[in-house]
Image 1 (cartoon, rainbow, N blue to C red):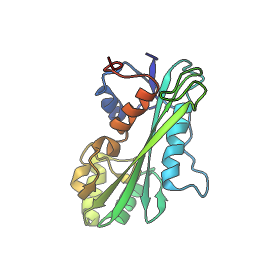
Image 2 (cartoon, rainbow, N blue to C red):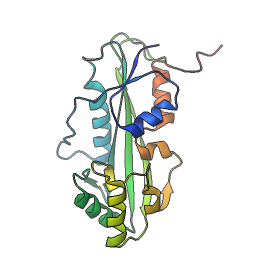
Image 3 (cartoon, rainbow, N blue to C red):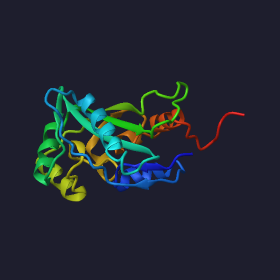
Image 4 (cartoon, helix red, strand yellow):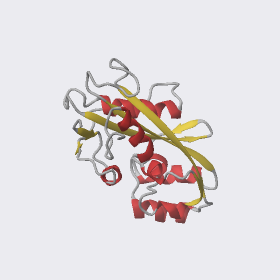
Length: 206
């Protein structure tokens, strides 16, 4: 089994990865989240997840590197991650009473020479999957929004909320069963990717 590196220092992503029972190292990615012009929110999530994983390839040679990122889409528009509480409140104001899509991408980058099951050596060294969750924010007034952002302080979080903390109070409906994707690291797709690189906690079939 290869060493595993998580290209993130997020305590929420680490808590999710802990559930898989793998030994791993968490390292901050050397990657700037700057979306190219004209890139869709879906493609942006994948681009950032792959970029984070690949950014540590030289520093952690010989390791499988996991990257993940999220992009929030409202009416086809990519909403940037808020840099302040005021921006978070503004985004929640736009989302209130409406449905939005949260795209969460997870990528795994492998060192050279790894055989990609069921393919052959020489295949792609970075694989990614994307999970899209539709969420409907309940109607909220300014006081409720301000109370929430002061409670969770969701700076740098897609949509200006943290589902892993008090965020569930914001929603009327969530249209996907994968809560891990909302938090930021979809575990079932991640396990599927790791198995393709030969990593399986349960071992190979008898």
